[in-house]
Image 1: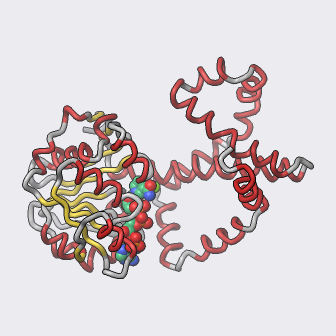
Image 2: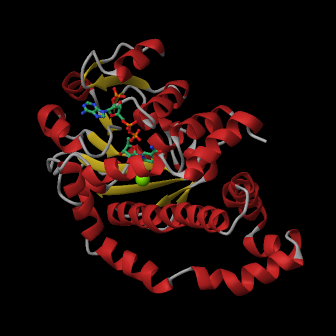
Length: 327
Ligand code: NDP
Ligand code: MG
């Protein structure tokens, strides 16, 4: 199944008919995915850590009758874990592991905890993964528009012989087979995600900051530097996605822009470091560093958040939004 792209025609929602699906966690991904699944006719139960959590109230507001994580798991033929990744192992061993029905299906939305061994599912359940490649609110919006978000699916353990059919039905129910979902391994999904977040998100965000800081230090008005450093990328990325990078550079941008992109762009990227980050990720070093940071209460992240929030770029962005809104 690796590298196969699955579409609506490859999946049958009937494999989940007369079956109960437990949504464990009702946050950024859980809430929108659950609403799509309900609209697709699946029979859902929602499992939440406790009545005092914000997600309990959110589920009630949406017309569900949430229950504890253990109760939801015990009732389910398919248990889909949509809890934040760091607290998953503890909550899993507290309330999920011993409540899984034999021959039921355990689904994840990210492979991290299974790949690195923090969660070891029992041998008598299917273990699968489905992840839509976008934020939850976009998943919901696209579904309502009759489209979907491209996704990835995986089967790690198949005890019933139809684990693939189960995960395909899950993907179909949130609209991700309307546009295609690709088969991957848990390792590819997890390490690919970790690599992308470090190199692409990390790289682009720090390039924006470097553009802003360098221009301001060189005497440019901060508002002008802000527009250059972040606003200008927004529309351009959409154009490149819909027409292709070459079409954008060769025909839709100016010839000066084309010359700048082709000659100076490669100087900005440190290809050796990109490779180093790839290798560290494949060796599990990124995962180990992150688990350690989490276990210590995220001291480095708290420190960096404070410095980031006080930066001139953030202040300028805030002023910009107050003055010009989205313009
Ligand atoms: P959230 O941060 O939105 O949290 C999800 C749920 O976890 C919430 O219901 C939250 O409850 C609950 N939760 C968090 N901590 C605890 C705790 N200590 N005890 C009990 N419940 C807790 O997570 P996401 O939706 O972002 O992530 C869910 C999964 O989806 C993850 O595996 C993630 O990797 C994956 N994913 C996320 C994407 C995204 O765009 N965010 C994209 C693709 C995959 P409450 O709201 O009540 O605090
Ligand atoms: Mg991620």
